[in-house]
Amino acid sequence: MQIDSSNANFCPRLVQNGLTLIELLLAMALGLIVILASISLLISSKSGYLTLDEMSRVEESGRFALEPISPSVRQAGFVNWGGEENPFIVEKEMSANISGYDNSKLNATMPDLSSLTTPGVYGSDVLGIRFFGSGTAKKADGTILDCAGFPVPHPPSQEAAQRDIDGKGRGWSIFYVDLSADGEPELRCKYQYERKWNSTPVVRGVESLQVLYGIDKNSNGFPDYFLTATQIRLMDDQHKSSSQEKNAHTWWKNVVAVRIALLVRGTQNMPSPRENHTYHLFGEAYTNNADNQDKASFSDNDFSPDVQQRMRKVFETTIILRNKTPPRID
Image (tube, rainbow, N blue to C red; front, side, top):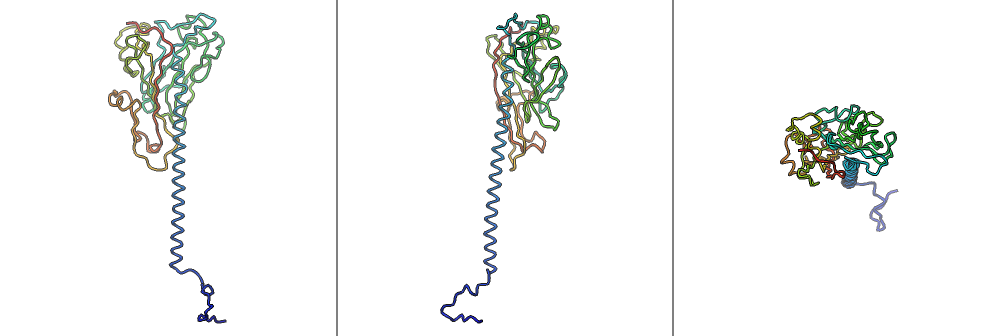
């Protein structure tokens, strides 16, 4: 049947066989624009979500890392004045309640701070804390815990407290940074339980632990300045004395505050490239005046390429020692 196009009632739809090439290309172009916009929005949303998630992880890790350090430092020099037995106190011949080393790490199963190796992970320091336990010599009452959460008992005798060996004297809480089995840096707690030494991870992603010690030079209970562990040891080396006399003269006994700085990183690289950032662990002013033995700042480029694009943040706190002990002897 032939359609008469001259008919007044002619309808163009009856002869429409499809889109023209130009119309098809325009439709495809518009469709691609919509698809690309949707993909771009999805990538942007995912990138924002990953950034917020990493920020939350870093914040959580930093707060969680400081959580066991602060009470452990405040516990330094604890004396159980309220116990049933006569309290033991730190005498002049005994070692200080706070001590540390710069740019070092430890063996997990060797005693106390005797297994130091250098350099530390990303220049990290070692912080050692001493304190008397609570309860009886045979059974701790659980009020005084080490950094791993184990109760520390009372020494069995004054001789044991003074000798401070075989796990019968003061308790230990030691913090340092080491690498996990998969190469991830982590804050670790070293402790002694039932005369055995061990170390447990506290938080993954802690790249560097830096410590400064507030020295009370005038014995008024307030820090006059903050020094590194190396600087304190150089001051102690000026006294040519036996090890027992050194305990009486050490500047570690004038430490009344501890300043902690942690550099914490996220778990994965950011999806979009980040500029190289500099992280000052104790502030830029301290970095400009720090000596070469103290790792006071980092930049993203200081780390291996596979982790340079991770999110990082500095966490810092200053802790005042709660338990005062007799200062050094001049």
